[in-house]
Image (cartoon, rainbow, N blue to C red; front, side, top):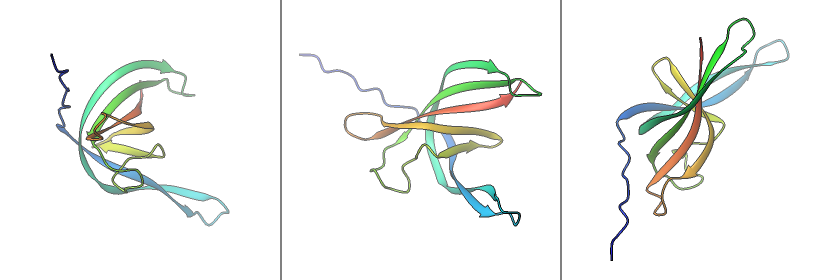
Length: 117
């Protein structure tokens, strides 16, 4: 009987997990800033890309599959869709999070990176 081989992701990219913080702007609204929650090692795989109208400048949008070590639900180290990853000047907005394998060793994040073209 053959056993299915489990693919182990190559966690070779260091990303910073960030969370949005809102503070009053003094004019009745809120200012948004991003706070680093910690660093993770991840595998970043591009999926699809497209160009869309971003107003004055066209914007390129690329979707990514980002895999990192698993963390239990509710853990502060488990990414959420309202967070993002940063790698230098690059920003990956997290859209969805799913368990990466049946043993919960990995978590898969589906994210978008938007850049002016």
